[in-house]
Image 1: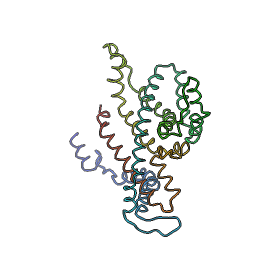
Image 2 (image 1 turned 30 degrees about the vertical axis):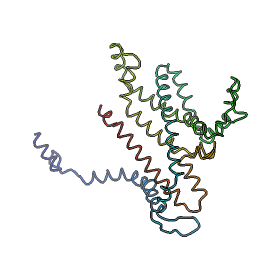
Image 3 (image 1 turned 90 degrees about the vertical axis):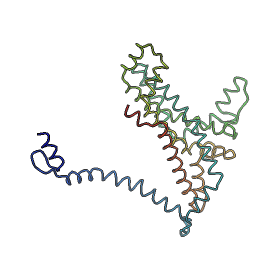
Image 4 (image 1 turned 30 degrees about the horizontal axis):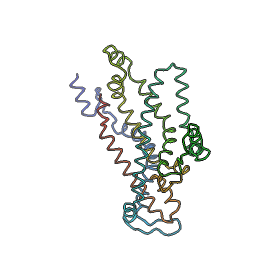
Length: 311
């Protein structure tokens, strides 16, 4: 009977002898994925293809386009300001991403130990900054970092310290705009990590405690390995979000002083709004897209998340 069933399956027929409507199944499958394919084509594929096409032209709103080949990419690649902004973006990510990961992980562990009511209050509290716009957060932190009447310098002077030009100095401006970025990024990262923590069976921790494992051993040998994919997701998405940040430096410092907070997307935005021809910002955006894709692929490769999925 089993041999007959297998033979019928290989022949594309049901065990009863009727041939399965293979093409009908395919049509249903194509119909179900068609909306997603159409939406992806309209909102992702077509804009990306069009951007690549425009990048090969000297394009302007006021003149006819002229094909220039790879000249726009050559100009961007030879521009030290572009590479400086990429390096500055990586530095900004190196400050904000580890801080967000560590604080969110600690906060998630704290919430897990709380009662249901207290955990609810903490979750709402940590998520509130995530729904505040970057513009409003920028204005609030400008008032905090303000040189003469800012809250931070008021607290420092209360303890006998001298005022610091937090957003007026090239030495501290990038660090100053990192603070609101960390503050806003904590909410979503914390909730994602909390969901991952709650998904780990308590029996693992109980068995480890019976073996005499302390908190650090349970964290490094149970929690982190089982949350590897969640940590990878938070790492990559946070990295991409931070290096593409432009609202905070735009509102708080306008990229200054002396371009010390000119992140890649802010440079592209300034070129787009100030230049007559749009070849530079489009080529720079595509090159930034390639840089981010390459770095994300390296992160995935180094962490090798498939092993964590397979257990």
